[in-house]
Length: 487
Image (cartoon, rainbow, N blue to C red; front, side):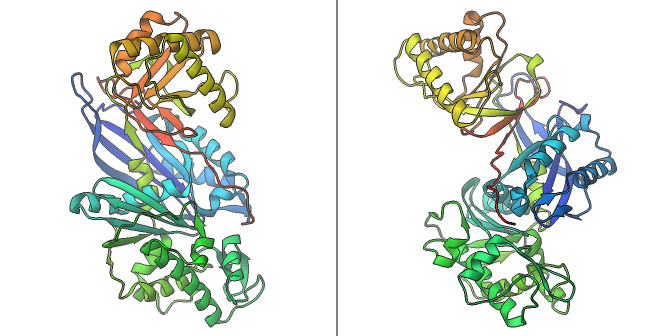
């Protein structure tokens, strides 16, 4: 780990959103990093630096200004006295409409390289919803009360909701609705209409076009449609056809009543400070946020759910990224430390090893699965990857010996002595490593970790062991950027 104190980690969160770009630096206190401890967990988080909130720099409506954004991140880390070699973990998150920009992947790769081995790139509305809910305090509230809490994070390009119950994430609900979908100059003339806003206009009789100066009632009507979609989604199934048209992903939500709702994000901040903004120009920020907040406030009054103030509003996602993106493996690991740290390793989901098969059968099963998954996720020949084994049953000495012999054959003969990096869902990495040690070709190096949940298509960063123990910091991420669209 980069820090000098084995009980703490330095974590960085960077959120490049539709409207704003932010940086936070946090200190994570861990417990259970000494020999004999059964697990490692983050027991405290402390934000030690909150950067300035910048308007996200663009070259044009389809292109992020990579150089300018990279300069801003470097500047903020310098102000935080946080050089790259002091960073242990964290996340670069490109959110909302920014994730659809043509060069979003180039940007996160650039920033991840510039800011250290463990600042990683993640994107996607589902993860954004979870991190925003944790950063806003909804997750902590649900854990403390044992009751469902829904966090509604309304940003510039998307609205991302996460339903927490107790300590669990129940589901996410995401919409192409946000305050930056329409943009205006200081006189109220429309300068840009995003594709989701155009889609909503098509569902209504409202006529708004670039270059026009909409009437107040036209703006109010469009804001009402957006606000109705948000409230509709808070209520759950069934959704109206208009709401379905702007829903991201599945709308098959659980049948669960929501007692408490928190609002975060830029529009969430406007919603909380509504009375303070009532005399301001609706185009103060050059977008649709104030009009949307006004319509939403009218619609949530008198609803059966209680609205609670969030711990954070506009900074919720970036704080969640800086303080909740990192987890730890179990302590029963088997690691060649010369291979660590590693980052951006694609996850290949292997088969469940749950039948009384011999070594050849398990070997063939592994090879078939690896061939299929590497093609699906476009993993180049020779490129290191994480083989995820979701289940080994029965979890016995004999079964682990069979699996170890099969892995040795795969990595020595099929994968030409490629590094063997394996993640098991169950607590068995050390035992499997001990069996591999007696069967592996001497030139095969290995990293075996356990008790982390991933899926095929995820990417993994694995850091160096924490303190005197064997647990390693792990960041699971998705580089599933949205399809190109006219934004």
